Length: 430
Ligand SMILES: C[S@@+](CC[C@H](N)C(=O)[O-])C[C@H]1O[C@@H](n2cnc3c(N)ncnc32)[C@H](O)[C@@H]1O
Image (cartoon, rainbow, N blue to C red):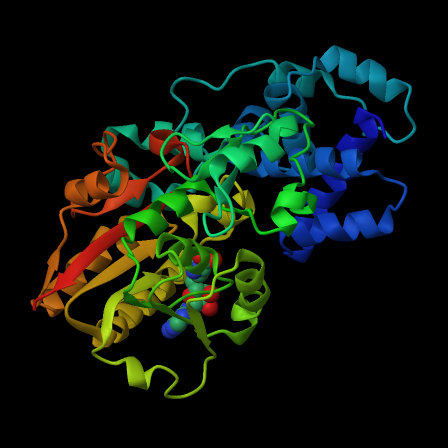
């Protein structure tokens, strides 16, 4: 397919997302099934157009005076991918799969830049209703933080130190220009491409099949390390899901001690069994969600890790559709779930044990506020100093800006070139 056909396809996929309210990944898959002639390069390019349109939906719509799929996709082609509108119109004229020719009004809008006095939420490409939360989280930097969250993510891998070393992973992925991550000592990263660049499919690599590495954002690696699990401990991973953090914890513990991996959703937990095998993680006991599944662990754990269900606002770079779907009701629901999980989780700790609370959210309601409310209700817990936590984990000072007002640690695409994550560590009195 040539660019005009790809643009038409992206418009069709975005329309499908909007009219049928389906996730982007599903709409892209359906388009691929109905258009089997399209190759992997075409599908990747169409995906990039759709995701870029959603990443910059507010600013593109403001420039175009229109938030239709066509307006957004044309804005991506010109404003994000650097196409010239006149050249596009020439291409459109000679291609039967092309969208309609750009009108004079569209062309003039496409070559203007966003006004300096455009509303902040438009400059930041974030939903307007979240403004008070973002200002609270980032003070004067909230527009810059929003803009960084509207970028494309890198592809990060975690070396599975139970089976390999970072050097070996780097070598096996040299053809993708893989380099060491800046913070995680076990991470490898490949830069985000631009335009129609395809993300390398590393899961067909021999190293992946052998369990040398996992695909895991550097931010997720960092919070897994900050969780501080050491060999020999008894650890409850209470919201284990498919086990991304469980695997990192098992590696940090060198397979020594015991991790209990639990999730209330059997389907989410299902992939963990195969992943544990491929990773050679042998100190993990998976507890299926049955009544009383964890009763024998009450008061016995050295560490309880809560990788809490959250709004996922830290992952907007990867799932920009969720940025526009989030509602105050959904946020309130997540906050309620988190506070119930925190209250439940602390029961499993032994005296002197440590509670680790993690979200992939950048919203204070789910982060510092949640921890402040927990501390108020549980005076036997004290916060672990985040600077000391970072120093112990990485043998270096915490990067500027990551320590929050409430003594948590917050990672962001702007500050750490990672997804947005939050972590707080609380110690129960002995
Ligand atoms: C952020 S995800 C976990 C991701 C996973 N730890 C990883 O690193 O791949 C949050 C998980 O919490 C689970 N969850 C939600 N409510 C829960 C509860 N009350 N108890 C345990 N797990 C819960 C969800 O099913 C979901 O899998």
